Image (cartoon, rainbow, N blue to C red; front, side, top):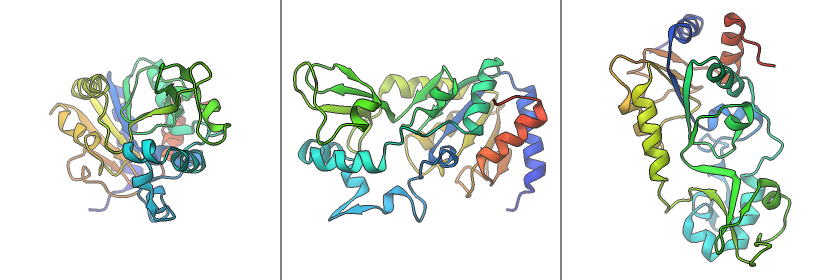
Length: 254
């Protein structure tokens, strides 16, 4: 099905205007305009190999503990973007929360750009690179400590190995975070999917918790499995769409 983008953007703008409890599910696509590559496109992270190891293997729980230095070599080069800044899409969501319209952001991303933009209620399903903990004494370390170090980062207190607070392959999502996300989605009167192909579960399954009365929208460059069910579908750059909607609603993103 083909959608007229301008008409769909207008419909999303109108839905935002009347909504009282917006909830948004975001994926890697929302951070691409900030300079962070996505995962599953033809040139995405998951096409990367180092030696015999594909990216999905190097981002596994088993690989972290068995090949910790190789994990960190890959992690620092491909996963950490300490200089990335929130783009118009992140900033619009933060403004909508400040206006009392947005109840929560649920994100698959680990870049913390929603928090940097100013959002307070963020369910980070896959954790965050900004949080790192000693595997022995659980002392906290920030992003810079890991990003600017070399080799395996170790705890200054006990010498234990530091692990990013991100969900690796083979690990389960935090139950409280997932439960909070489900609860937020179920209460939304406007649910917007931004920058995700909806191929990764359990995040993709959150769309099933939308109330029948909720207005649903998708903003993603490529088609998703939810397009046929959504009320509004915009196959376009999310930052450009956000900038347009903010301008028409008179919201200053600066």
